[in-house]
Image 1 (spheres, one colour):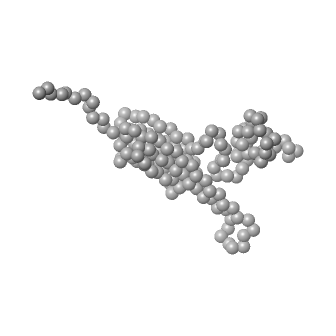
Image 2: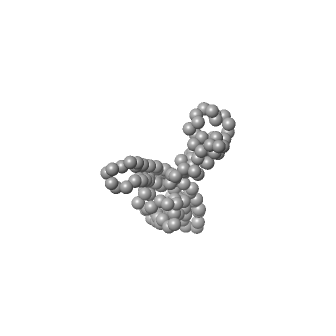
Image 3: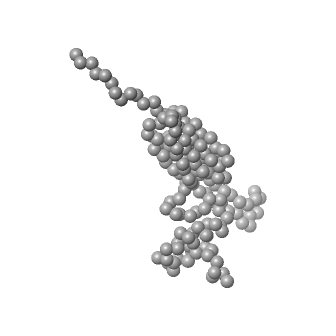
Length: 150
């Protein structure tokens, strides 16, 4: 009966190589695991980001369910916005007579190039697992100039 349940198949080794079902089995394994963030690797999957261009600003939304704002690090390097999530989970009691204790650490990050944006005026808000960043556009100078002939 246990051979019919697709659980922990990624530990089976080279027996499944070339079957084209590796990602399917990994998604099932992650669904039945107790991790707070799935460890699937479907083309380097991370958190979802939507970028919308409005009249005077860019609106960036990142889905981060279950993440606290203390676990999010926002940095600007050159013209790149970097969103990094680092999380450490510990289970077990604080007593010293441990029978079992586990720790889990994970991190992921996304980098977005923000050319033509006013990077000094970015506003960020985390609400119900959605990180919303409002990035105003830079005011463009007129590219047409009159040149006076001497």
